[in-house]
Length: 301
Image 1 (cartoon, one colour):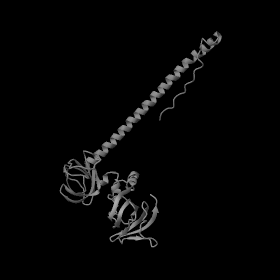
Image 2: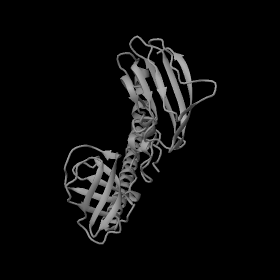
Image 3: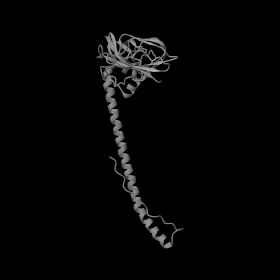
Image 4: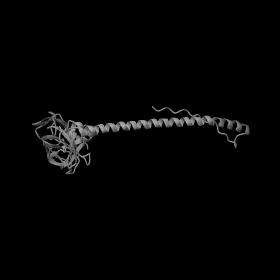
C-alpha cells in the first residue's frame, strides 16, 4: 500500500523591502528565513515519500506482469501439449460445407460429433465452427454450418484445429440465432445484434421467413404475398413479422395453414398505404409446422 505524503507547512509572509517599514521588514525577514530550514526538510521528506511509493508501484507492476506472463505461458503450454489441439495445412475456404482437415500432429483425441473451431492463423478473427462427422487416422471430416463461418476468402492452408470446449469464443449474431454451439459464449452485444430487425423492401409473391436472418423481420409489400412456414426456427421460439403497405397499399397476405391465429382475429392485413401490421407468436412444432400467432393492426409508420 502507498504511504500517505507527509505534510508541508505554508511559509510565512515573504519580506518586501519596498512596502514594509524597516522594523517590520527585519522581523518578517527573520521569520521567513527561520521557516526555510524546516520547509526544506519537509520537501526532502515529501520527495522521499514519492520515490518510495513510485518504487513500490513499479515493483507491483513488475510482479503483475510476471504473473500474467507466467499464466500465458502456462496456457500456451497446455494448448501445445493438449491432445485436443492440432494444426493443419489443408486448403480450406471460409464457407459452409463439408471440410476435409488433415492434422499435422498424431495422437490427437478429437472424437466423432465433437465440435471444433478451425482458426485461420493468418487472421485469428477468421474462424469456422463445425462438428466432426468422421475420423480416418489424422484426417477429419468436419461439417460447417452457414452460421458457423466468421470471415471470408481462401483457400487458406494455415489452421489451428481446437476442440470448442477449450475456447471461450464469443458467439456471433448468426450463431446465437441458429443455436449452433454448446460452447461459444453469448455476450450482451451478441444478443443485441441477434435481435436486430431484418428489413426487406419490395416484397411480393412467396415469402419464407428465415429465423437465421433475425427473430424480428420487417417487410415492405409491393404486391400480394403468400407466407410460407418459417425456416431455421426451433420449437418455442418467439418471432415478430412486420408488414408495411408499400406503394398504393391494398396488398394482401395468405398464410400457410400452420399459422394458427387467435380465434378472435385473422391474418387479413390493413389495406391503407403506409400502415403497418405486426404479427407475433411462437413456434409450436416444426414437423408439421405450427405457430401460435396474433396480429396488431394499423400502426402508423
